[in-house]
Image 1 (tube, helix red, strand yellow):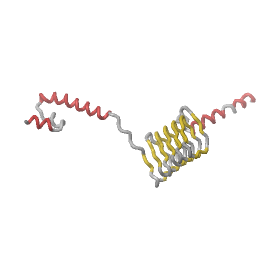
Image 2 (spheres, rainbow, N blue to C red; image 1 turned 30 degrees about the vertical axis):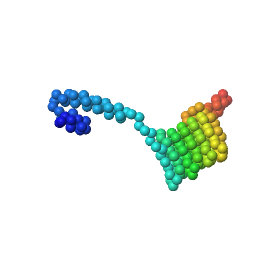
Image 3 (cartoon, one colour; image 1 turned 180 degrees about the vertical axis):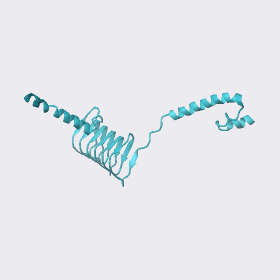
Image 4 (spheres, one colour; image 1 turned 90 degrees about the horizontal axis):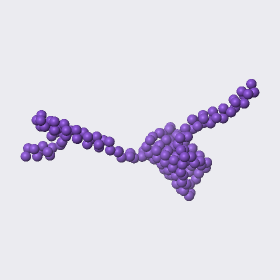
Length: 180
């Protein structure tokens, strides 16, 4: 009977009370418990929900995350995310870069994404650089569309601009050297 009550108690208390001969067995069961808890710790975690910026929120500044963002308010600045959803009443003024971009509201600025989707309520004023794009009937779009296999790699306008400036600057000094 005494052993039955011990069995019904939590496992952590059971191995600590037995005599030294049982301690070796307790170490083995403790190792098994540790291995089981390690397994649970290494199990994949559930994906966190998207960060939601409510309709009454106005942000001035850049946003950067590896997670998902849903914007319902106004953002003046660049946005980097995994999945970006711009709500119907939302406005973004700045460059947007994400693996997936879903636009229900308004974006003024460049959009870069592997998958870009403009819904019927979308209004985009700026260039879209994408791998795949879907534009629903009724969406308003002013700008250019360019397909690239990796639209996110050229996402740093400063680096791309500097590279373009170097390429344009390189031919200019070359004619100057032969004339000297």
